[in-house]
Structure formats: C-alpha cells, structure tokens
Image (cartoon, rainbow, N blue to C red; front, top):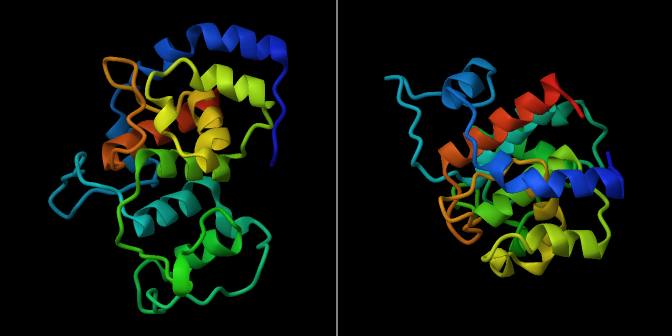
Length: 202
C-alpha cells in the first residue's frame, strides 16, 4: 500500500529522526525470535554478525508482512537456481510473484548471495510500503547522512522511507553504511522497530 505523509509531519519527524534511529530497542533479538520473524540455531545462537542471504531475506519478509496473504501480481516465476527442494522455495516464489524482490540475469535468484544494507533496507521498505515523498523531501531525508551518496539511485526512494521510519540502525558517526553487507543483527533491529510501529502506529 502506498503512503502519503504531510509536510508538517515530515518537518516534525526530521528534527528527531537521527536520534530515534540510533536508539536500539531493548532485547531486540529475543523479541524478533519470540515473534517468529527470525530464529536461532539449534544451540540457541542468534548469529548476530552473520551476513543475511537473499533466501533468508525473502523468508523473513514473507513472515513479517504476510506476503502469502496478498494477491500475487504474477503466477509462478521460473528461477534456475531455486529448485522446489530448496528450503526457501515457497518464500522466494512469494516475494517474486508479489514484486517485492526480483531475480537476476538468466532467470537466477542467487539465494545464498548476501545483500548490502542499501538493498536489504530498500526491499524491506518495499514490503512495508514506500512513502510517496516528493524528490525534494527524499533529498532532505538523505541529506542528513554523509554517506547517503553511496546509495544507488534505484534505492534512494525506498531508503528514504526506511530512514524516515527508523528501520535503519546507524553507526556512532550517524552513517548508514549502505554498501556494507546486511547482518542478522541489522535485520533484527529493523524488525524490532517495525513491531513497535504496529503497537503504536502514528
């Protein structure tokens, strides 16, 4: 669902955006595990520093946003490197059929390939619903971060939504680090903030 935010709301939010995004929710890994959005290994390890794969991202998005309940935009999508025996086959089909994620050249998905923070947060925002900000507003949001120039042009609109909503965890220097690989801890942060949004919608 597309969203439209008023200029007044945006002005109020921009002043406190960075501070809000840097405050990690308490016990976020426990929270996302208990919510069923992510899981631990058999020995109870969350693997916070492990890089997120495209298959894992697809699976998390389906559970978080109940994408399997949406009306798909297209039917079964053929991908050469995701056989029906793959553990994330159904989830990958769901994100592809809903247009939340796309494949690559030659009909491949590269399920084990890790994703950058810019790509992962942008896709997260696509599943959430990208705000229809005018270009000037997008520039104002991104302009608060010194490394926002590293965000690819195709991801800037959705990254503006992710930053506006506080889904992006920033480093101590208020940097996005868009080209760095997305970790499981990064995703747990975004999911915890999303859960907060569901409890206290604006």
